[in-house]
Amino acid sequence: GAVVSQHPSRVICKSGTSVKIECRSLDFQATTMFWYRQFPKKSLMLMATSNEGSKATYEQGVEKDKFLINHASLTLSTLTVTSAHPEDSSFYICSAWNTEAFFGQGTRLTVV
Amino acid sequence: DAKTTQPPSMDCAEGRAANLPCNHSTISGNEYVYWYRQIHSQGPQYIIHGLKNNETNEMASLIITEDRKSSTLILPHATLRDTAVYYCIVLLTGGGNKLTFGTGTQLKVEL
Image (cartoon, rainbow over all chains, first blue to last red; front, side, top):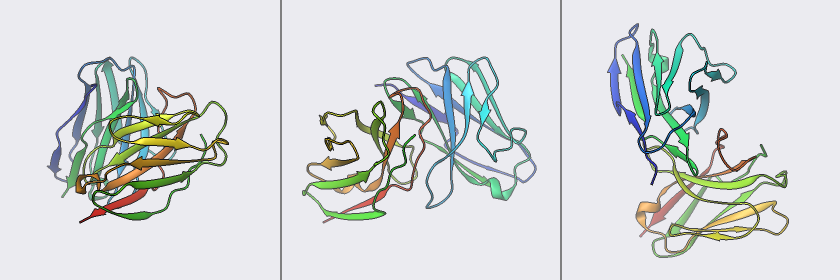
């Protein structure tokens, strides 16, 4: 079946640094991918829609300059958390549609 | 997209059927019902979806009421590995659109 792969699965970074998370559709092409964030014991919150070859669409309240999204190919979208702070620590998950929405395994970001 | 309502938690004995309800009273005629589950610290996993007819696959069955205002996900023989948060999502076109997650149902399968 279709697979969406995220990398890295875990990352620890220092405050003020930037972190890039990759999301790949392994056996299908995805013109659109979605990025979610999940805090402990909470549901997934959609952050943005990543569009291949064009600008991402951000949900209300999500800072586009802080969460940079690039969708340069039909199989790869990246989310860069810029100038990370401890409050950005969260579980980040991407998804892409094939026959249904497939999700990556998630990236646990810890900012210290 | 229509809003869904699910009980926050349910318990089920291993080997028994787990029946997870979902209300979606404002669903429109071309909106699908999707079910996903999320095991702790993993990405959500697709389970099943349907429009108006009941559906069954190797994981579960989906029963949608005739008026489509509610549905039930059935795991016929729950195992400990089915312990997860189950999300019922109503989606307009059935594909390609963003999924909006509610709070879901935490299913705990116990011995």
